[in-house]
Every structure is written in C-alpha cells, then in structure tokens.
Image (cartoon, rainbow, N blue to C red):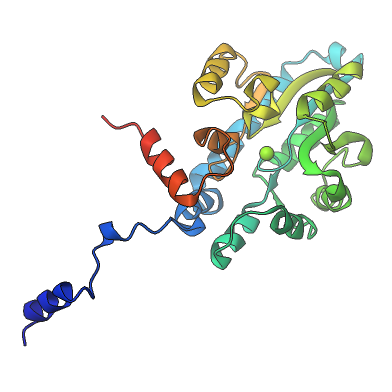
Length: 263
Ligand SMILES: [Mg+2]
C-alpha cells in the first residue's frame, strides 16, 4: 500500500485532523518563550540596558555640584525588570507549563536570587557616590520586604534599607509613595520598565491613552524619565486586554490577533 493511499484512508477515517480544526488555546510557553529568551539571551537586551544607564549617568552628571551639596536630591527607581532580573521565574513557569500566580512569584522572591539588570549596580553606586539618595518604589508586597532587602544587599546596592524601600501596601499606589519621597526631596530622576513607574496618568489606561500620555511627555524620556526594556510582562500587556483579567486563553489569543497591525 503506498503512502498516499494510507494518508487518504487516515483522512477519510477521521484519524488525521487538520491544524485549523484544532483551536487549542496557546500555552504559556508559546506566548512567553521568545520574550524571555530576548531578556536572557539577546545581546540587544543587554545593550538596551547599558544604553539606558549610560544616558541616566550622563543626566546625573549634568546636575550642578552646588545643587547636590544643598542636599535633599533623590532618584526613584522601580525594582523588577529595572534593577532586578526576574526572568528565571518566568523561565521556570514555562518549563513547568504553569501561569504566573502570586504564590509562584512569592516562591521566587523568597529566594532573594534575582540578578541585577546589566548596568544597574554600577549606576546606583555612582548616584550614591554623588551624594544623591536612592528610593526603591516597587509593587512587591510588604511581606516580601525582608527577602527583597536581602536580595538588594547581596547585590551590594546602596540605600538598601527599610527607609528607602517602599513596597505595595493596601491603597498605596506608586503615586502615593512617590509623593511621600517628594515631600522631603527633589526627585531628579525616575527609572522603570513600566510607564506606571513614572506617572499615574498611565495607570489602567487604554492603548490610545497610553500613547497620548507618552507623546505628552515626549521631551522627558531620556532626561528625567529613564525606561528599561521589558518584553515579557507589564501594563502594556494588560492594556491589550483592556484590563479584563477574566478573559479565557482563547479570547486573549483572539484579542492579540485583532490588535495586530498589518498593511
Ligand atoms: Mg518593574
């Protein structure tokens, strides 16, 4: 019996189902594997991080010495995917075929094992040497404070203490914590991988609104606001789904396809 004849028999008997008839939802693996590899294995990601911190250093060097001597200058930086590389947690989820959960995240942060984003340690040490304070504002939860400080201290980061690390407590969006720092300090720079790290106008906003606000801040990017790349997760992804966290994997896939811009 030749191969073609066997194939026809299999199709007729229903034992071969064509791919287009099996619309299985995409696995975590299919969606996240390439962005995680970009973060972990592309030299381009490293170059982008160095580029961000080099630019940040240049901007800090523009601050007049007499302004620094007056004191009360500070920078605010996010932690995850700005200073800390958590891609290992994502990689494990992919390998295990699991999705992100607060339990999986806590299991990872309990290890205090994040490495530093390329260029982050040298930049923060440089800022500290200049006499500028560093405040870490992160949406890690307050029960992650001890493990987070341990992680920052392991990396030798300056100002890695409770007074300079403001994590997420109930009803405390990042803007509230930014204002707390701004009460006593002149904040000369903000660093983040998520636009929520810079201003509250980006919080829970649509794609178009996020674009508009980004354009409004056109001159601030690369001067007071320094952005690090994060292709794996962030508010940009939530905006794709219009913050509907109840969408099924199939609905999410359909939404992603609908949002693609072709020609
Ligand atoms: Mg972040």
